[in-house]
Amino acid sequence: MCRSINTLMVTAYWLAGREIVEAEQGGKSRAPYGANLLEDLSVRLTARFGKGFSETNLKYFRDFYITYRERLTLSETGEKKKTAKKSHTVCGELPLSVPERVNGHTLCAESAPSFHPDLGWSHYRTLMRVEKPEARTSYEQEAAKAHWSVRELERQIGSLYYERLLMSRERKEMLCENRQTAGLHPLDVIKDPYVLEFLNLPEDHCLNETDLEERLIENLQAFLLELGHGFAFIGRQQRLTLDGDHFYADLVFYHVRLKCYIVIDLKTQKLTHADLGQMQLYVDFYDENVKGKDDNPTLGLILCTDKNDAVIRYVLGKGQDKIFASRYRLELPSEAELAAEMRREMKLLGMDDAKRSKTNYK
Image 1 (cartoon, rainbow, N blue to C red):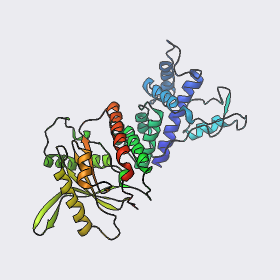
Image 2 (image 1 turned 90 degrees about the horizontal axis):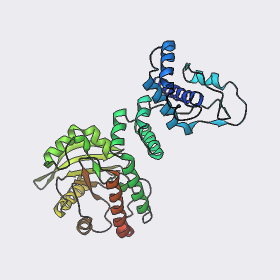
Image 3 (image 1 turned 120 degrees about the horizontal axis):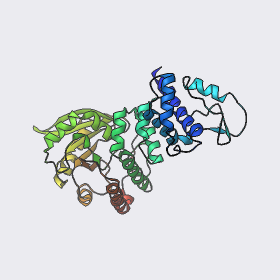
Image 4 (image 1 turned 45 degrees about the horizontal axis):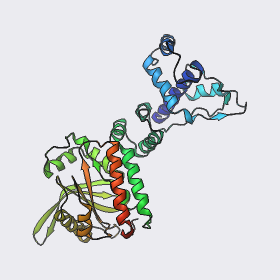
């Protein structure tokens, strides 16, 4: 019921915006200078129908229609003259007349566009702030698929999720040219860099590993959102005992789609060869002592402030596909920084992709 109300409300606001733009403004994005159109409409509609028609709201309706104008379905034929009546029913008896013709076209009965039932008006108001149409569409699809709240959607937009996802996809496409995989691959879920701006720490903040772990646990929901789909939290400081010696893995997750454990080690400095050796121990231990017969090989992810890819290649060997090192940022990167990172990744992939492992994950 709530989903239906959300959909009707969003559709009604789109139709109201269409009425303002097409009927009142003659199809133009703005009314003539000095016309005071929205102010006059607000006064008249409020007097007749009550609250909900403030000048600010009418501006949102107009901008909403303009942003999603391309979803309008037009019919060149003169059939279905009852369009306006049906549109009123769909949008919950919207108290604005809906014109039967727009720019010489006859509106069909399906002229009210479809919006995702899991996204409400607050979602679309947030999406309207995204200027690039392709980015806006991507955020809309991801928000619906992952059931993001408005707050989560705002966070993903603010952390340039689309730009980072695009970078990861292009990186993945380059890798696919040199490997054949069946299903999901670890590189499909590992990001670089991770953005931890939700910790509210400046980039130059001096933080030890214990404090970093503590803050991530306190913000576990936001951290899971940044990690991506499929990560399930298992525990922190998981003890590994080898002949009486104890070692502790900072964070352990299980990925439900990769069907494997993912051990995460936190570093507040640049990655060293010793860090890689430590993670190799963790991964091997989980493979031998924790992994079930139906699980895929354990993955290791080291989160660090910086790394040297040549060191990783020489320590772990070429073609390894189980241990990854990703940087993390405490502040949001700019698009320019992301572009520079993309160029860096492309250069590295051009050198090393041909010899990457072809390990298959279910």
